Image (cartoon, rainbow, N blue to C red; front, side, top):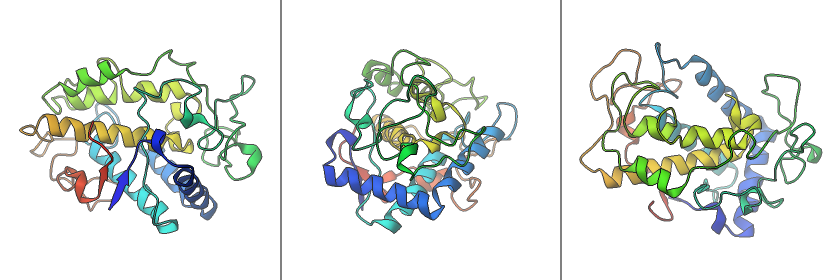
Length: 275
């Protein structure tokens, strides 16, 4: 069973294994399918209509399934690979190790936002951005330009203290843990990180930046932490509800998995430590 580790503790060999598997999935053509899938749900999820991947209770199980599929695709290339997570409450500067040339590469240059260092730099020839809203075919970042600061541990602890998983109207105006974690209310956790990175991460095509997976892996770990803190609270809504995925409804685009089957992450992987 895969053990998902903090990226800050990865060995040089583990970093190379992850990067090489991601690059190979890109070369094979499978990576861009994940980018397109994510973008299609960003575009279709709305507060007053059907919503599955975002602005809804299924934000967390949908992305858990999405990450599992991606992790399995990497493991088909290298069975030793597991998704790492990025704890942005601790590694929160533009020169943190995650942005090193030996891992994800650094910030975009000031002239056009193009990432020029690391294995995903366009100049390396292995990371053309082909699912894009415009003609730019290179990875873009603008660290810290869209918002000054990443969320803090105090911000996270405050959201983890919320006892209700979600509340009506089950969209971006809801109270509860899910919406505060997603970032439409409160201190803004998940959404703020996307904006802080900027570039591709500030669009629906955010998986174009491999940091997407490490960010969402940490979001998934926070959900596991909330579950451990609130064992008597569960996924809501439990009953069939218009336009949202209830506990036992299957989720698009897979149509074979309901949130109920994804509540226990230890069936699939563990984390190196609990949050």
